[in-house]
Image 1 (cartoon, rainbow, N blue to C red):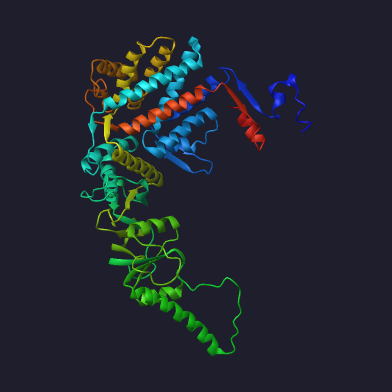
Image 2 (spheres, rainbow, N blue to C red; image 1 turned 180 degrees about the vertical axis):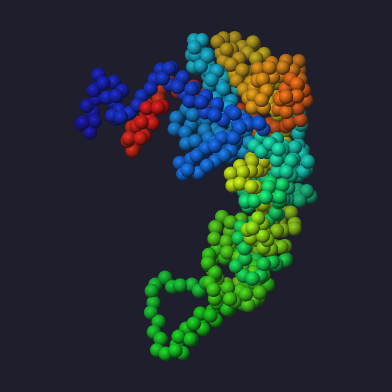
Length: 554
C-alpha cells in the first residue's frame, strides 16, 4: 500500500497508470482516428447495399470461408478490434437481432455521419456543437418519418400483403430469387400464426420457422413443411406412419446401468441363460407397454440398443434417433409431445400426435418428415420448416441468412404494418426536408443539421453506384423530383444501359417503417457515442507480444 501511494507527480498520467498502458487525447488522436476507423468499416459494407450489392469473401480465424452480402454476417466475422468501429458493429448486431433487415443501413449511415464530422471539425466547429446539431436533426427526422408512410398492412394474415413486405428484404440479399423465396417464407410464417378465424393478434416467432439445408438441385426445388424435418432416416424397417401417436424419450432406449459397480456370480449355464432372459424380458415389457398405448412412432434422444430395436421391429413401431437436444425440443413443439426421461409408456398428455411421418430421399440423403395438416393455433402445430436446396454449401448458408431476415420482416409487419417508399426514396425525401429545416436553425449547429441531411444521401447514391449508374447524376435528378413534391421517387436500379436517368418516379418498393426508424436510431446513437469520446485510455492487454503490436495500430 505504501509503495502504491508514492505517486510521481512529474510523470503525469504515465506515473498514475501501470506501465504498458496507451493514452490518446486531442481531436487528431481520438475523434479523427475514430471517424477514420468507422468510415473504413462503412466503406467495406456499403458496396453490399441493395440488390446489386457485391459479395464479400471472409476467411475467419477457423479458416471457414463465408461468401455473403449480409452486413451483419460480414461485421460479425471480421473480428473488429478498434473500439470506435466496434460501436458500429454492436449497432449492426442490435439491428439484426431486433429487425433482421436494415443492418447495412445502420453501418453505412453511421459511417457517413462520422465522415461528415471531419469536414465540420476542420471548419472550426466543436464536437459538442456537432453532437447537438445531429441530435436536433435526428429528432426532426424521427418526427417526419411516420408522415412518409404510404401504405398500411391491416391484416398480417393476408398472404399477398406479406409477400410485398418480405420480397424487397429478400431481393436485397438474393436478387433474382425473391419470387421463389418470398412465398416460401410467407407460407412458413402463416403456418405458425394460426388460422384466419383466430381472435388472437397475429405474431411470428422467428424460432418457430426452421431451415433444413440439403445440398443439391436449385432453390426452386425448396418447399415448406408444416412440421419438422429430421435430417436422418429411420432406425427401424418401418418408414411411414399416418395419424400417428408419438412417444419421445430424452434418454436412450436401452437397459439402464447401475451407478455403482456390481459383481454377478454365475455357477452354471442356467444362471447365465436366466440372466440374459431377465434383461430381455424387461426390455420386451417396456416396448410392449409402449405399443399398447397406441403409439406408432418412438423417438430416442440417445442410443437404441440392438435388443430394444429387435422388439421395436416385432411390435411394428417406427423408431428414430434424434441426438440433438435442440432438435428434440423442436420436435416436441411440432408434435405437442413431452420428452420423457424414463423408459416406459407415456400418458395421453405426454404423447404427441402427427398426421404423417415418412422417410423420404432428398438429394441422395434420407430425411424424416413430420408433417401436420392443421394450421398453428390453439393446440395446432406452431412450427414450420423450409426444406432448402442449393448447389453449394456457401449458397445454402447465404440463402438461410436471407430467409432469417425475411422471417424477421414478417415479425415486424405483425407489430407495425406501416410501409414507407423504398429504393432510397424515403432517405432522399428526409434529406430535402432536413435541409429546409437547417435554414430555420440559428447558431452554428445548423451546419451539423445540414451535414446530417447530406449523410442521408448515402443510401440513394450507393444504390445507384452499386447498380452501375452515375451516382451524382442520379442524386441530382432524384433530389429535383423530391424538391418538386414527388415523395415516392426512388432509384431505378435496372436503368443501367437503357438510356433512362436512373429515377423511378413511382417506385413500387416498400420498406417497413419500424425497421427503418430503428436502423436510423441505432446509427445516430452509435455516431454520437463515438463523437463524445475525447480520450482513449487502454491498459496493457494480457498476452503481450502480438496484442501489443495490434495496440499500436489503434
